[in-house]
Length: 432
Ligand code: ATP
Ligand code: MG
Image (spheres, rainbow, N blue to C red):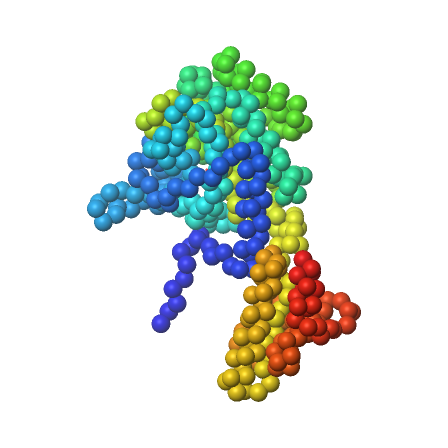
């Protein structure tokens, strides 16, 4: 019978890699917590309407990337393509936005039907951050300082650069949109196919086109910054002043727009040139209209999401995987019963397992690997060596009867020792 394989673009995370993921996730969580952000978790499935209303009907995500299906009651549901909409929905539903500010983060899988390639998957993972109830630009800046600190903690600061832009207010954007459409309509037949379509649906997205010909046509196009009103200008200038004061370098990219409809004022991306075409590792911006759009009271919001797979790729590409990520056991505990008699086997193994429990009891951070499944001394030693453990703790019948333990050092010249159990345990709990 043929084997069933995973869905294209949906990866398994194998044990060799999971400790790197845990390292990344815990480093991020620790950084976010140090700024007072708290975790929120929401379901993977939501009503389709939530994403249509928030992300926008004519965006790539809603038009062609969502995993949408009818459940058994005929209700249209969608696997979340991003977290902001669900986060707003959950906050509103539980009254978290009423007369208060919130600093929140979440982490987990997102789903988009895209063409799978390096750094682009159909099930991918994001760690997202949202801050509600603050107009900025101080909170916008805090998000950027926080990400800058995170890159430092991960050792990747030199490989990422910050791009920022202002999309201004909805009113200034609307006036600009008109000017852009008028200009681009004049050169419509020279635009790439996607951009021609976007001219009537989502013209700002054309600024973001990857097509070189379209990009060269845009050189003479009206510039969004020239259409920003006073308030938008001031917001952006103040953000820049805070970043300057904090020494966070940035590049103003006037063509930076986001693929989701709800952004205004600040937008930003952290990009790298080390990952080929999929170079954005973190992206976000301000979305003051979204909460209201989803039925809540007008509430300012700003946030970002980072792509976990891309950050993992970047850590690997830059060789920034810390040694601690390779989780070898500290101690490999052998249980060698000389005779094959069932009783003997039981007593040696029982004794070895009880020693392992004592070690964990006294030193919870110690990584003890108990050999299970029997085998000769030689074959168990081979496995101990292969495990990368620094110490093999040998427990045979002699040890079990006389309540002693034999410590063998696998990575140094220290001679092996056979000690009474209590003395051996004292020594072993000090290896950490
Ligand atoms: P892109 O321009 O790369 O398609 P996007 O604008 O669609 O990105 P966002 O919706 O802003 O991306 O998501 C934030 C981050 O999530 C991205 O910067 C990226 O790191 C990551 N991301 C988005 N889509 C994918 C995907 N299909 N596979 C892996 N990571 C992704
Ligand atoms: Mg995309």
